[in-house]
Length: 556
Ligand code: ISL
Ligand code: CA
Image 1 (cartoon, rainbow, N blue to C red):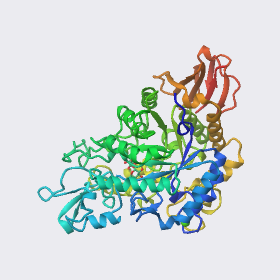
Image 2 (spheres, rainbow, N blue to C red):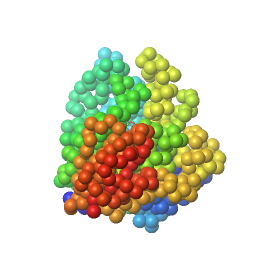
Image 3 (tube, protein in one colour):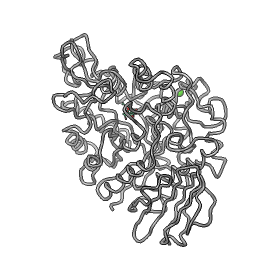
Image 4 (cartoon, helix red, strand yellow):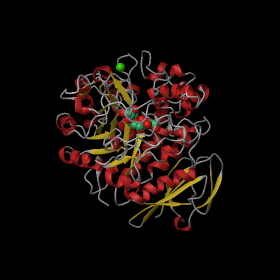
């Protein structure tokens, strides 16, 4: 397989609002990030994916952008940005920026113009339609509750917003919109020297002609906005590749809600000239039901293995995988896929990391994951800041679908704010994140779970991640090896092999707190243990796996 730096890299995601506050206003900022670059270097990561830092009224924490070429005042200045990127490059790391171009903020200059009149030159930058019998133009629902259409007085028409009403969708059918986006991207690459883009909901940019009604789910309040993988999305991305991406040495990953394996081969196919990889949502959809993520369903291991293995096997040789268990939109992986009790949190976090990093693809570490940060015990909706959770709490309870008590329970399990509580740096007030009042509450477990404690403990989760990341640099098989699932029907163990040039790795992960016997395949007799989360000297014949034990062994 062809080698590439972005295949060998490990990415670390920073959610800037919650990472490090340098000036005591309770909000993380760019100087805060710059002050912690040595920490990231010590962890060993190669690339930082930075969630949006552009000017924004913050209806959706920066995913609603009002100026793509200015820095959000709360986060600092363009000089702070230049200093930060210089610090990143000086340490041999790279910077991947979030690109949010399915929509802008309703406070973006383009939209302020667009809404003024039907013949405004910017009118066609967005998606405007007449109402139908005094109702919205179609039945689409917004991801953040309610209709996906907002009525606008000025011209007596509706505009489309797949997310909040402060996030109007851009009209990608308009070639001028595409040119604007491409020239902005060229500016960030050419003038500012960034190293890549993570493209927000890029699978949604091409809307189906005629914007037909979507099918209504059993309990859905609105029809499903059937926008994923629209008819022109690949044409648009090929154009973007030709006009922007191919001119630089970039890493690109498309966030692709609704992407299937076959579609991923188009977005990220080695010879498609679109993107390097996509984020799919199949494994993080396994604990959803007809009410979406608002349920206490857990991820069934056998199905998890099936989904992960299908992506591993079917993209092999054709396209590249991204590997993630958490990000700023997902609950904490240790709480969701594992066990965040004090007894098992550490071994379990190491097990999950092993299971993920040993697969084929580029691994993403979300801030705090390397410390085993957990979900937050939100007691009341007033402690929640996320527009998705707040709107769903209201909508589901008012519709009589889920009670307020149950919604709070589900928000504690699945809400996006679980990932957005401040990074836990030390055991001082506010976890060392800020000297002021943090914009969202700090998880009370910061007194034990924090970076300072982790750095002092050579057996910490942090040091385990450090070892895993270093191993990736030493063992090309970890990057390029072929993946095979063993024991597909085992409901407690995840076992797989990787093979490359006559070498073979065996990865064994116990996903339960039970002790489990497992017979190591004979071909691994005398194999060497590369990494594991317990002290162990024997890994052959019948072995007794401890709770959440993980190990990787390598055939000589
Ligand atoms: O997190 C979700 C619930 O599973 C998704 O619906 C999520 O909103 C979707 O993946 C799109 O996410 C991205 O675009 C949103 C923004 O709120 C998210 O933070 C971003 O990652 C709109 O820009
Ligand atoms: Ca600040």
